[in-house]
Image (cartoon, rainbow, N blue to C red; front, top):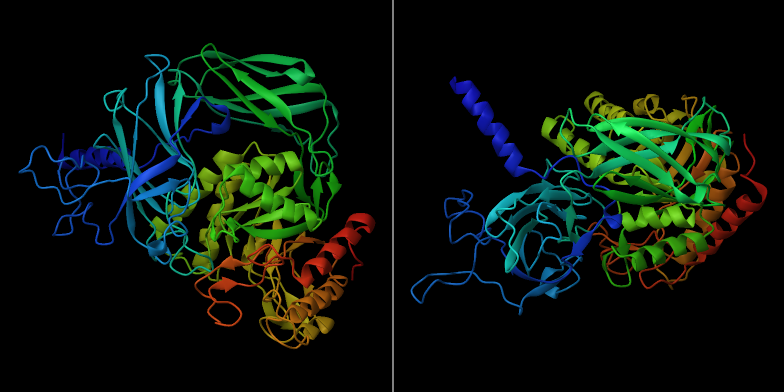
Length: 621
């Protein structure tokens, strides 16, 4: 064996050890799980003492000074300069920033420790360790053995636990969490939201048989572009993926009890295409969010999910849901509970956010600017709320850096893999407000191709750049990325950034792309309870004037305008917003304030959406 071969094998082995496994386990809420949520001990480590030696090299795995090893001295002469104690504990899931004042601005490393016992239900079962999300980098150790590492603060990851590592008693799980911002991360250094650190979503043990259902994707087939799907003899297609080795075969049954449907397929590869016909179904829509229990059964495993059947596409300058044009009455949402100044994660949190959107008369939400907790998309399914789901390719990431592209693509794959069975999601977004250049457009185009390759059943978009100098009183969305997206989306703040709201009276919008047009952001800041005349910035009157002028302008939008998601539902934390009187570390563009109070502009948009709901979209040019 030559030297190059040895190096290659070493790199491959290093990669296998370093990163979370692929493919990702999906449909986790419907698997056999054991929660590791609750109180975890922690050590704050701003100097990375537990990870690097004094020469700043990563410690050897068995080094007793490493914080992933046992902290109890073997005897009274044994030197231990670290320790875990209940005196220092954090709740998981949860960001660390809101749990203790010392963390409010903290960016760096925190070590988490959780002790647990675990006995397998069957001796030969596989056990996986699953994280809903950790912001941003997680290095995971069990009983002193490194299981791997994951980067990306908003997508899930998991590791198969070797039998030689897992014990029935006294397991100790340690996670090094680091939320330091870097230029070559996704997102990059500069964002307009709070960098909440920590284990922000659930941690679970998942037990599976030796051969199990890894993943599946089942959806209504589009007969032809622009067609209206029939609710009778409906054609369904997709695929099933088992964790079996290539060459094995496994009979797998798909059943939908409510429709008295069963069909068996022979799985001959790890991922096998399937198709079948359902005699009669109810199509999923915001007005009728019908979900069916779909059951996948093998000789050793059963996996269930609730799935809605619908089609969505950009066609003939419109967005068609089940073959019929829709108008998206949207709002942008950050994954934050502002009254508690913390990251949202629970079903109760999601209900607060989605019910606020429904009170606004929304039928759609844009999840800004990253994938939200899985409970968000699952509840959107059941409540009938359309979803735009996005990865944090935001502003000025390093588009020339191949490593950055790989990180973005990994997060895109994890987002789509987790949620591809969610009927509510109609748009995958690959980024927001990225500055136009040839290298950026190539970067984003590759992400779009990746998204289409993973899922051809949904639209792919991004918030594009606007040309404000295209002609007299006409702003044109001619970003070259518009040639590749399905939905031409753009952010505009006419009357907040650049001019006053009355500028809307003489402004029109256009795009050279023969595609549907969507306003992905618009809004103005206001401090709840601050009242003045309409010319005074940060007054509720200014924000109200802004929305009134916007709505008048929207009545002149071209006929391919298909909706909007104003910025934003509620005030949210941002280190960029430092006006001491009106912002004080908060982005104040919310229609709700940070205590849940509705600002006057809320009622302007609420009425506008109600009128559209009753009478259709406003007049066109």
